[in-house]
Length: 112
Length: 115
Image 1 (tube, helix red, strand yellow):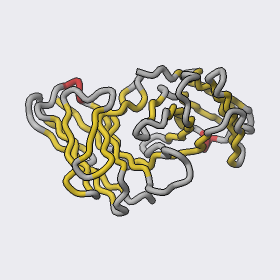
Image 2: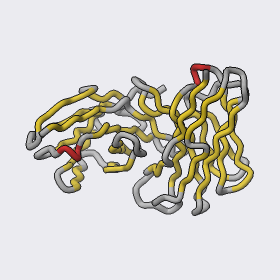
Image 3: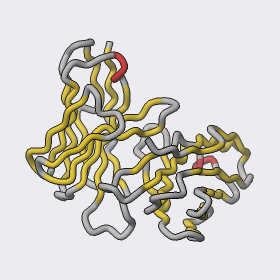
């Protein structure tokens, strides 16, 4: 079983704060690293799929970086808004049968 | 909209009864997955399929079986439900030919309670 770890487990920030989370994954057999956003009572939705060491992806106020050699990825949210409140999941992909191993997620709560 | 429908969306059953959850897709993609979501564990893969009658186990397959007799349907069966199988079950697909490798599209989830 692959070990994918996320930290922190939960985070409570105020509107306008910038924040970041970490995903750690095995540095061997890397194929891709995924980030998903999961709002309460909804289904997870992909934010980013990253494949290359040094990759940086951005979508609005959310961005992510990837270091495959040391096995970590950071997700950044700039100027958090209440609508950013969600659980953020990362998932490690070895390329085998397109199976993903998910971390346990970081739960973000943004208050006014 | 990935065209994924799960049924039932909610079910309460008793220990020892069989339960089947259905995942239906409208776009005939090859890869389909069943995950369960539990507090403290995130999403864990139960079984997956890469085509009609082609299925394989995930990391938490004990107590579950699957079938895929048609491209559009992937069934998850709990032969004899136990309380430890109380969970939210998500079906997911990978769209054939998509650029992002392995990107999953999820159904809305099926909440199962085993009393």
